[in-house]
View 1 (cartoon, rainbow, N blue to C red):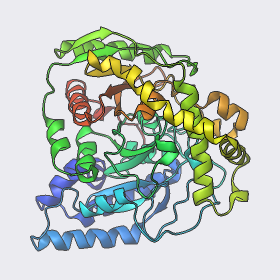
View 2: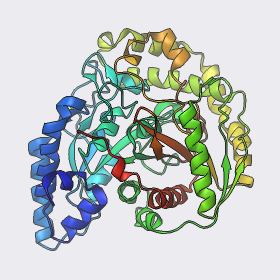
View 3: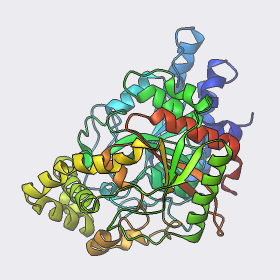
View 4: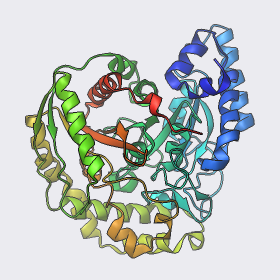
Length: 462
């Protein structure tokens, strides 16, 4: 296997090759670093690459394997970390120059990845304070989509998405407060999972975005994301990797293109078509598929926006010692979130139970919900970065309309590649499950991957 193929092999295959002694971790990490060196200047996916440190971690992994002392699931595998998550010795920059500098300790999810043997290869770019559905920053520039360098990979996990789509890590960590794993996964041809709230730790960033945000995997293959989840979910086991190889039971699947009130999307023709195609594929696979809309409460969108805005303000207060360095849009949004009365924030948090009950009635009859993922294709690079605060408030959800509801209720949601649009850019669909049934989404997504493989549709020329 040549170096490029090794870099593109993905976490599960890289882990298998290393465990079998067919390659060393150093070879995998060197191949990944070589690919980063060749490709990242075009993509700007990584804010920082931990080249020498990653090679030292690879050498440690090889020594452990050589001594027969280590069978950890991610031993020697290169993993990318989104730059809103702490890695000891590195700054958590949040896409801005306002940050506090290097941190002393790994976030809990990074600690668990290391405990599973992962090599932390670098930190991936995010928009400032992870606010935008594109990864444009004043401080670090813009991340670019490997499928079209003139387009954004999405946001806020856009750097992780660009890195994964180009094979610059075995698997990547993203975070999702209103679609930030699912949106960039859909726009770069990846499988991305927003886990059930609480299953993957967010400490020390607890209650991120007033409880909306969670950490999760982004990967070229379902098996790679499953291995990440085995390593990071509480009470870790091989449950997710086993689910990725197991056919799901016959499921009742609801299909809906209705968005929550207030989101005001314009659903693209191709995005709508692929929802229909995946619905037909699910029928062909033996599942019962019925058109049925969730009962979206009228309060859902305003409550979500209140929580997002206060969450941005919280992050500025907690993590930005130089707020004067923030972009003007971020300062204004943070000021708005901070000025919200405590009673309004309490209402937004308190409304969650009734909102979850209303949406949960769908799961009295169905196992999975199929919806569009992004409403349309990716923005041009830099367009979203030029939005002011008013445009951000008016437009932030226009292409994410089917995603934030499930951050409010805490249920798992997956972005699954569906095909390419007329511009040759990826289109994804969203699968949503009951709280705690993340393994079922992994199993169903893997079934779709086997039935309609997407890995060979990778970006060309990267």
